[in-house]
Amino acid sequence: MKITKIVSFQLDWGEPGRPGAEAYGGRAAFVRVETEDGLFGLGEASPMEGGFVPLTIIARRMAPFLIGKDALDHEVLQEQLLHKLIKLGPEYAVTSAIAALDIAFWDLKGKAFNQPVYKLLGGAWRTAMPCYASIGGNAKRSVDEVLRAVEKRVTKEGVKAVKIRWDADRTNIDLDLPGDIAKARAVRKLLGDDFMLGFDANNAYSVGGAMRVGRVLEELNYDWFEEPVQHYHVSAMGEVAQRLDITVSAGEQTYTLQGVKDLINAGVRMVQPDPIKMGGISGMRQCAALAHAYGVELVPHQTQPSIGHLANMHIMATMMHLAKPVELNSDWERASLVFKNPSEPTNGVLTVPAGPGLGAEYDAAEMERRTIPIA
Ligand code: CA
Image (cartoon, rainbow, N blue to C red; front, side, top):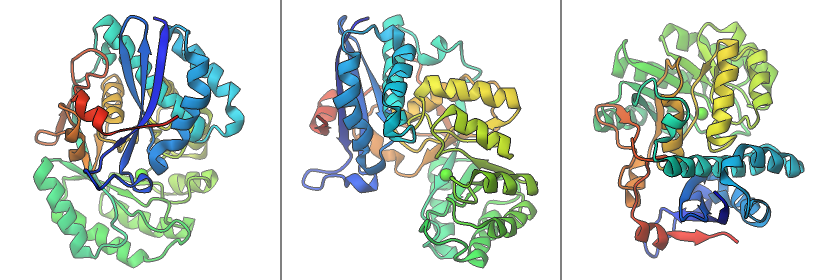
């Protein structure tokens, strides 16, 4: 399966005359890998700042290396690229580029063998999975506004699990602990005792602040407490995890398998690497093996509504121990601008497509119309 062409491009989620803002998630970062037999696979990189950093690395450095190689050798080729370009920084720039390529290669392999990716990975434990509504931007909302935002998502999607995210300014910590606690209490009261709840601090606390909030989350029976302190303070993250009873999670800003191991060794018992930031499907399989070996939970982070989401679903379908739902971010509806099988939940449940590869079905003309090539 000789690779003949690799195109990296942004997909503009905006409207005519109002293009999606690169810096604010208005563009997805995609890659398309084509082979000599006329097949192609689609992959997605993390869309930070429009994803132009990984997309440019793919276009300028990775594509020339890959053209003419065998797509079925992709794990070897990806390791060669990682080690060739590692001085660009394994955090995000190179790892997200490789993640996008890996997803495209798995999509391609699925099409070549006419099987869904989860079959090529050894089979699914389940192809229908509950999702949780991941609801961001709550630092700036009042208690009442938080409740309205939660109600809206729960009513529309029928989910049985919710995560409230803070998304506060990362240069300030412990800004409003009583306010954050009041919102956590109000959401528990609104949804009742049996609802699965996650609290995502988005790195907003000191260790002391995290302990204070974490104790209340334990009292309120929250199911997990995500990224309480800065992600780069790995030992502090581990300290909070070890001192609290509630499950503390982290890892969406971890870009290597070794980084995930460091988090686990520090004391984190639920890791959340992201398939479009590190390793793609192959990388998540390695993380799953690592988490299984240590007996910790792996719950991939994934906020994009189309290709990244489908890749995540195929991965999660193949994981034996899975105690948490699939993440479903807000604005998932925009995927339907291009994709025919968007991430739409039915009574809080998502189904993995059974078509070949990732099973993505889309309007090719609309995809073309929204394409912004990266050279
Ligand atoms: Ca998070």
